[in-house]
Image (cartoon, rainbow, N blue to C red; front, top):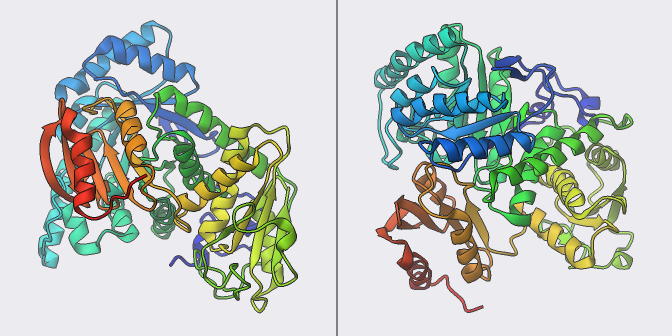
Length: 548
């Protein structure tokens, strides 16, 4: 459980007013080509191509569309040295067309590709889980302290020359940790935990600081929103404790598509942005990359409303309470007392709430801070359950309300206010309000009411048509309430994210798929035409299938 001291990361000591009012964490400014991330720069938006990187024409066309949709940076995968070198061709062609948006190379497993990419593009993302360490196999490893120090020295030997090359070419670096690709070395010492994810990146950061290389951006992502947000907060505190202030890139991996993907992303990214954390964001949707940018822009608009809202005064956080710890309340019927959060219009009607339940209302531009101040004012001795009612104006369209509500309710639910929520939005129908509220609860893992699909957005590594495959799997399996099914285009995060899924469908080769039960591969390299029926058979064989 995180301490309240993590709440305002940017301050050396807890500031009770910072709990209610927006205060951006101050980070180092990192130049990336003709733009920059962090410091006083605006929040930067990113997306990633899903075309094969060796297809120059297709990659140029899609990168241009992403830039025209509003991206400040465009990322492309580079599986090998040949792909990395072709990024230079893509970059030159884009520049000839007047597109000046910086390019980012995305590297996994292949340090040689990272070295090549550093000479071709403005920024290179490397993954501490596989830059030096071999790919994750879920093996338990044992090290003496001397042996573990030797592993860190191996990282130093490979990383320092890379830093020198980046310095020579003016190339920035993103250290991008994914929950699904932690190394066996880190897993063996720290477990599959936020602490392990943080240490994975801190090992690299310490070497970067020793080498006096500071053009670094950090990302630390997971498909589980609770893990992702807790880990980003923990990382910010870890950096602060060691005198580091590198900018943060935020994203929820494998968020999926449609309303589910948008809400899951808004809960994770939006709740952190509202607390001042984050300098650049990517909304990862299993859709066309251009579709990610309007969602990202709307999140930034909502944070702008929060940051410019009228100042809120309040009594300060309750003594001794931990961030994320559920607020203690007594049970009043089905509300409070540790029961799942209730939803207005699903579990109760507004007129049914009596004096034993507190309704806290807010239409403030900073609804998160306003609700916190009201709950804090109740005092620790007041054990009445709290239903949070957030109101949004009728002139906000459905997507605006959905993303704002996911950010606001998400932040409060993750903080521990979990008795009940009430979405008051005249611009949405009753059914829309119900769906949004229930999906927010699902994203925060506080109430499960549907199947969860953990689906990657796709990239140049993807080995099948992700959008159509995801659509078919959802059509077949959406009635399996409470089940988590992963749909991954390739093995980079596939097996790792399968650890958080009950079943997995992962691209293995062109036209072939591997199926997983948890993190165990149970059907390897089967033809894609057989994969969905085989997945259904697997679910049935394990007793998790029910007819629609």
